[in-house]
Image (cartoon, rainbow, N blue to C red):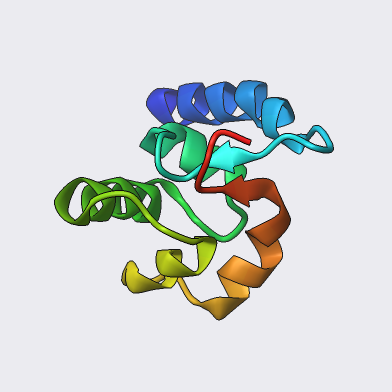
Length: 89
């Protein structure tokens, strides 16, 4: 229970960093913790799967390529499209 509380507090502390308008998360460079905090509908396990896919297959060319990761569907893409990027912009 204590470790859950610690994770919850840590997550809540970094979440505001991604809630700022105009802030985009690069899915080709973000770590699993950042992805889990930034992408609605993606938890820690799915974020780790995104990183593993990226490490195995190389960088994502487009945001739509996230759908190649098992468990990431069109709904997740549409909910998060504006906050994600595949480049440094």
